[in-house]
Length: 297
Image (tube, rainbow, N blue to C red; front, side, top):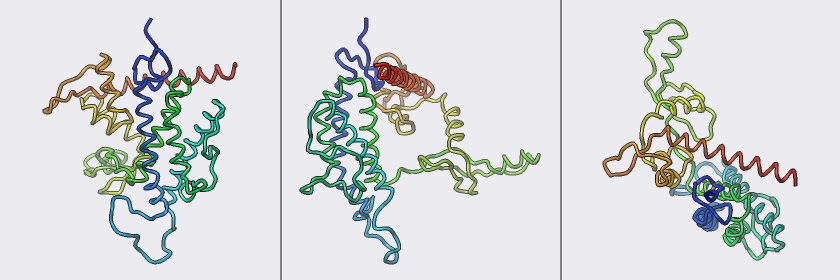
């Protein structure tokens, strides 16, 4: 009988716990990164630093808030997530860390500081580094890993600024309108549609037409599923880690379509998306089973 695999979906065998040591090592690195990024993130929240370099704030005095509400909200979310895990682990293990493990005590972007100038968010991240091996043997480790990864991404976003807009395909707005009116010979807009990550709609840079991002993303996915890309290219466009794709390939679950000029393997996008969907479904099944078991306990 084969050993169970990692709860995070990476397919590594785990005979002695719920998560692979390699995945916990990544979580340790991410927690250390969070601790390192906190001061810079607080500077952004206080508007004491500009993301991406440049000079100070411009405009008339009092024309902008003295804090960055978006950065503050992300810091709050990260602090709540990590302090929540501090509280859960401390209560479960019967230990008392020198950290405020409770919920929000004001805005993390503006406060989040303990006695003696200690930064509770940094302290939480550093404390959790030492709890990773213990968490590896807990059934809820998949949620822990997800929260740590999301927290690291959130702080990177605060420090580095918003991500670039994503390409959502050609516009064709006039052609759509023409077909609706029975005027098929009317020229269509040849502009390109882009959208901010997380926004509901994207906008054509040429004519200003709006499209639903979800619909355009589904259309684009269907259009490009037949093509092959490197693991790095797929990871840049979809929430699938490059290492995960490479692991699927090394374990024979994913075959290379061909190789690019640099010798890097390219994989059929449709195959990668199907594997990712299957892993997501299995994680959801495990989560639901764990909740049912806890309710029946």
